[in-house]
Image 1 (tube, helix red, strand yellow):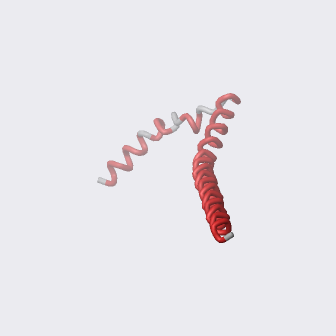
Image 2: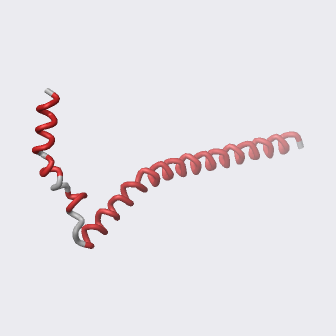
Image 3: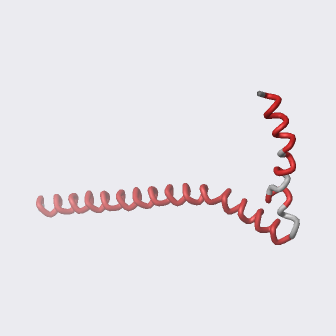
Length: 83
Protein backbone atom coordinates (compact mmCIF):
# COMPACT_ATOMS: atom_id res chain seq x y z
CA UNK A 1 0.00 0.00 0.00
CA UNK A 2 2.83 2.36 0.87
CA UNK A 3 4.47 1.62 -2.47
CA UNK A 4 1.31 2.70 -4.32
CA UNK A 5 1.24 6.00 -2.43
CA UNK A 6 4.93 6.64 -3.16
CA UNK A 7 4.53 5.84 -6.86
CA UNK A 8 1.40 7.97 -7.12
CA UNK A 9 3.20 10.84 -5.38
CA UNK A 10 6.11 10.56 -7.77
CA UNK A 11 3.80 10.56 -10.80
CA UNK A 12 1.81 13.53 -9.52
CA UNK A 13 4.88 15.63 -8.68
CA UNK A 14 4.52 17.53 -11.94
CA UNK A 15 0.97 18.51 -11.01
CA UNK A 16 2.28 20.03 -7.78
CA UNK A 17 4.52 22.36 -9.74
CA UNK A 18 1.41 24.00 -11.14
CA UNK A 19 0.89 25.69 -7.78
CA UNK A 20 0.10 29.37 -8.27
CA UNK A 21 2.20 30.35 -5.28
CA UNK A 22 5.26 28.46 -6.53
CA UNK A 23 5.23 29.35 -10.19
CA UNK A 24 2.44 31.88 -10.61
CA UNK A 25 4.36 34.82 -9.21
CA UNK A 26 6.55 35.22 -12.26
CA UNK A 27 5.34 38.75 -12.96
CA UNK A 28 5.91 41.68 -10.63
CA UNK A 29 2.18 42.40 -10.36
CA UNK A 30 1.44 38.83 -9.28
CA UNK A 31 4.22 38.89 -6.73
CA UNK A 32 2.96 42.16 -5.25
CA UNK A 33 -0.57 40.76 -5.12
CA UNK A 34 0.61 37.67 -3.22
CA UNK A 35 2.59 39.79 -0.76
CA UNK A 36 -0.31 42.20 -0.25
CA UNK A 37 -2.79 39.41 0.30
CA UNK A 38 -0.46 37.70 2.74
CA UNK A 39 -0.01 40.91 4.73
CA UNK A 40 -3.77 41.56 4.76
CA UNK A 41 -4.59 38.04 5.93
CA UNK A 42 -1.86 38.24 8.57
CA UNK A 43 -3.06 41.49 10.11
CA UNK A 44 -6.82 41.01 9.71
CA UNK A 45 -7.23 38.76 12.77
CA UNK A 46 -5.08 41.13 14.82
CA UNK A 47 -7.28 44.06 13.81
CA UNK A 48 -10.47 42.15 14.63
CA UNK A 49 -9.21 41.14 18.07
CA UNK A 50 -7.96 44.69 18.69
CA UNK A 51 -11.34 46.09 17.70
CA UNK A 52 -13.16 43.75 20.07
CA UNK A 53 -10.81 44.68 22.91
CA UNK A 54 -11.29 48.39 22.16
CA UNK A 55 -15.07 47.91 22.19
CA UNK A 56 -14.97 46.25 25.62
CA UNK A 57 -12.64 48.92 27.01
CA UNK A 58 -14.86 51.72 25.70
CA UNK A 59 -18.00 50.09 27.11
CA UNK A 60 -16.32 49.50 30.48
CA UNK A 61 -15.12 53.10 30.72
CA UNK A 62 -18.56 54.39 29.78
CA UNK A 63 -20.20 52.17 32.40
CA UNK A 64 -17.73 53.30 35.07
CA UNK A 65 -18.41 56.95 34.21
CA UNK A 66 -22.16 56.32 34.44
CA UNK A 67 -21.76 54.56 37.79
CA UNK A 68 -19.60 57.41 39.08
CA UNK A 69 -22.14 60.03 38.03
CA UNK A 70 -24.91 58.05 39.73
CA UNK A 71 -22.85 57.82 42.92
CA UNK A 72 -22.13 61.55 42.79
CA UNK A 73 -25.85 62.20 42.27
CA UNK A 74 -26.70 60.04 45.26
CA UNK A 75 -24.16 61.87 47.40
CA UNK A 76 -25.53 65.25 46.30
CA UNK A 77 -29.08 64.13 47.08
CA UNK A 78 -27.96 62.92 50.51
CA UNK A 79 -26.31 66.29 51.31
CA UNK A 80 -29.40 68.24 50.22
CA UNK A 81 -31.76 66.07 52.30
CA UNK A 82 -29.62 66.60 55.40
CA UNK A 83 -29.38 70.37 54.97
